[in-house]
Image (cartoon, one colour):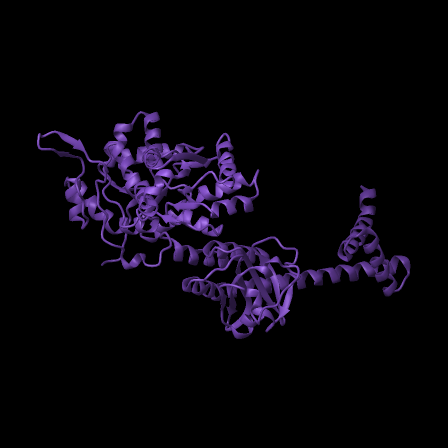
Length: 566
């Protein structure tokens, strides 16, 4: 199969949260990217429903909790922590049956060490989630009290169907969707679609569809927008978004093989050009998709024996395209490796200061591999010094160990990773530091940081509870150790050079100040130096500040005759 490419097509995306990643992917596949945010998350007027849910969960009043989004999981925790202990809430949640719609809420729950009873299969719409719940819980679902974390807006179809199957349903809203503060880019998008200013439009959520048509309605050009979409390629990420498009009488040309951003853009790059050429030739949409190599199933009504029509219960005008192509292999929601390489390369190009480089590496690693703790030790002379931590620590820049001591020192000495799933503290290589609570964590993953075939540091990830590190996580962290080694070494050397330059400037200033004191007070060099030391201690100023004050006074004295003359 030929490499996917937009071949210069103008591609419009209405993504908000991951706009930079979308633009990057579109450009990578040879498209001209137009990314216009169509929505934003805003807090609710009141958090009372979420707080009442927390109190009821802690009291044991729920049997099942359904999470639709990862953002919702984190937003809920932030709200609940304003009134209740997170440990108390999570203890209650871990005793409850938990349902996750897909990988994003699953990832957020995993960070909290919350076990999941049901995960909705792809395409992870509310229908798949409801079917999975019925399969898992069976007739017991009819007695369960269910709480549903909502995601920006209610899902009336899901709530209605769940109410019929369960004993009680409680909505738990945690945030809501709103239009962007600046509406001008959305207005321009409406006009661009209406006037064939773009070739492809990507819809990644139903809310994007709703907001685009809401702006078109305000502008009085809904029909122009609808007409414009008939002449361009319209791609929906999945069934829920497709149903919203159908509500506005828009038939998307196809859905990706998997409802994920990376698959969507890759397959759009493969097929959009063919579909667009056929549509511009006046070929029927269904025929155009077939000619492009896709499968398209017509949707609408089916007739009974009397000739009467009845609506199809699930509106899916398109079938998915062929299975994933090799060009998409390895994507984490379509962006994993690309994000990884771009992030690291941007860090190297940025030439930031030493500690900023380390902090950003910690932030990136903690996002790529969920963990409770992340340390970066840097080799300085023959000691590994703790220089960065995911969690705030007074011991940063203070704790150190020689190569060979502890698990960290062993990793540096042997230049190979160590993964411990449980009881890390009883490993014979382990060495405790009394000021580090992470010494009591169960699991640990440690890999060396390399530069020019030598060790320059060590990265440690730790988990409070037992955790079996997957092979790809170990490989990812090891690869990161190879990639960031040169950058850490550059930043460290640059930091040392700055310190040396600063010490040199300080010495020059102190020597000049001593000379002035010797001249003016007729004292020895040692006496002048001790006088400056005494002033430094008494005034709580550095020697350089004292020296610069003396130099400034000397400069002002030299200027005085000129000032008086004027």
